[in-house]
Image 1 (cartoon, helix red, strand yellow):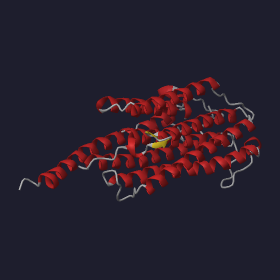
Image 2 (cartoon, chains in turn blue, purple; image 1 turned 180 degrees about the horizontal axis):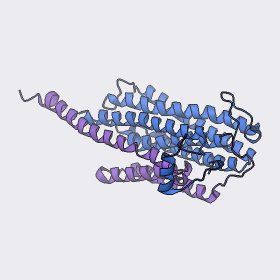
Image 3 (cartoon, rainbow over the protein chains, first blue to last red; image 1 turned 45 degrees about the vertical axis):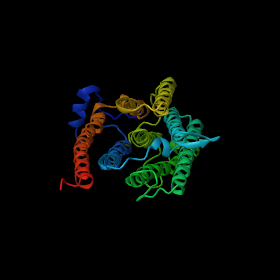
Image 4 (cartoon, chains in turn blue, green; image 1 turned 90 degrees about the vertical axis):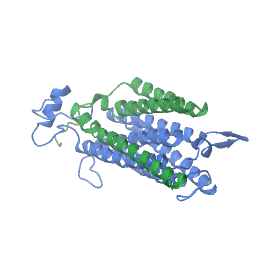
Amino acid sequence: MSDPKIEGYEFKSGFKGMAADAGSDQTMFKGVHWGKAMMWIFLLSDTFIFSCFLISYMKGRGSTPIDWPNPSKVFALEVGGVSVPLLLIAIMTFVLITSSGTMALAVKFGYERKRKLCGWLLLATALGGLTFVGMQAFEWSKLIHEGVRPWTNPFGAEQFGSFFFMITGFHGTHVSIGVIFLSIYAYKTFAGHYDTGKRGWFTSIKGDYVEIEILGLYWHFVDLVWVFIFAFFYLW
Amino acid sequence: MEETKKDQPSTTHKIGIYMWIWGLLFILSFCSYMVDWFQFQGLLRWTLILTFMFLKAGLIMAFFMHLFWERYALVNVLLWPMTAIACFVFLMVAEFKYTLFTRLFYFVVGGGV
């Protein structure tokens, strides 16, 4: 949808288009913004990094003869004297999905040139990400107070701590970086850099709303990774 | 890419589709939380967790990341490498079963001495 038209090039859909893409001269994804193609390649490599983390977690958890800590109990929260399992994690999941939704809308309204709406949605997304990181910091400090360390914990198998801090820490870093870039892009949107085509700070490429879509790809990926962490680490 | 036309309005999707996907993601997340809430165990638990997980991942990738509307070349470049991950998972499952076996055999049973 973002793909611009190139003179003398006609895009074909389906497998014919795929063959034409693969066999085209000079560049493969003709008409796709290079930043978008590169973001996808980056996300692919990031997928492999997170896969390695989750697979090593699977191997660690599967190969220990000692009982794995029950995540339902470890991550429970006391609300009014009642222990609610996984409450904080569930709220974090909903916050991240909400921010993913606002991001998708920001991309849409960016392309429709609704500058202010796009900017506010980006800010809302950043706020969601910030809330998520805040709750994660709370969760980390709670577990550290309870004596969870990368090398030991009071609940069961000792590998639990190292996998927990590594995986959620790496994901939290991604969210934090996302929040920083969301703030920068929100500023650039409000300042109208994408409407006037003002050149970027690091590149001489003219500003365009496709940059919001590229940022959106990153943010949805962060949400996507959380879907897998939530399933494998917290629910399994 | 400099020939990009600025005045040409890009076509965007209707807001309804995003709202639908958003709602579905909420429902699916709620369902996967309920799996823990009701403490389903065993095969039922794993099946439900994986089903909800893949549905959510698929919805996010297809609609929020626009893969459903993307050209096949990009979709195929992105999705085929996932088979390598599946192979890796398969290998490591075999590996952890063997490691667990050796640990139980030598640490717990005592190597049959």
